Length: 350
Image 1 (cartoon, rainbow, N blue to C red):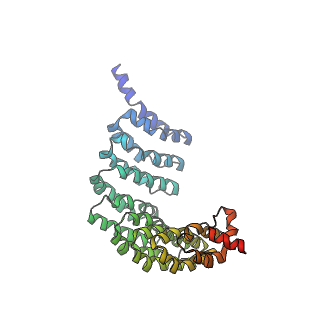
Image 2: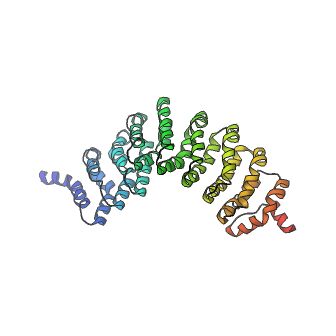
Image 3: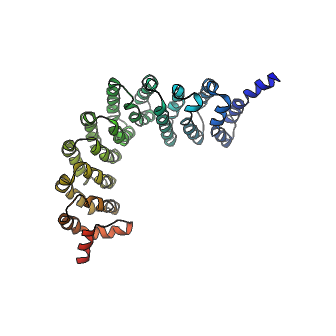
């Protein structure tokens, strides 16, 4: 009986191994989706010593299976013994963050962030920061792309010296020779700026933002513009006026309509950061250009912000500037755009 009981203890891991090696991808997927149940049956120590090494050695599978594995491991901190042992999950997730399939990498990065949020500060410095460095300096672009999504979660948990290293690593990624890496760096620049000190944003990240918004790849500029709102919130009003405002004015006329579309989407947070006076003096012409854009998608995006934008203006300015383009705003009303009262008065007078 004792031997049978001992054999039963190994049954869950035996079933997992057997089904993960099954020729039927659906069986393997179902097995991965039961990882939590299997971990509970094994206990924390055997999960760390048996289950995780098995997953590390058997991570060459169909994308659907790897995606499920990446998602499940993000919930695994309680199964490995809680936050003090959460670092044991980093290796399998690091491997998954480097695969070719984008959705798997993205899910692995998401799970790495979930795990990192639960790690003690000592584990951040000992385990998570070296992981970021390895990915940032990886030979394949996939690892460098994934690294971009990990900086924000680690930064506030790091020492001053470690924070300086993180900023330097991020600078390298923003200047990477591979457009896909620069695109990822541009996409995550806003979240990274949101956790930095104001001086560090102005000194270290603002030049990177300027470089990325001048990139020769439309897709990089497109994603860099999306971080305008985060930069506007992180910078002082003087820095916004001196550095951010010229970028927005320039990209309101960018050759790519997608970039102009993103400028329209970022207009309101920028106005809120600059204040009413600066908005009236500097942003109205750029906004009017977006309302008059040759692409319908840009006009609709701009018109969708007309109520929020108009709250920063005086009624006479609404009438003379926005009201002069009221027919464009009215044309977008069919897309659910609310028209300010002052504009409606102009429309009725016409």
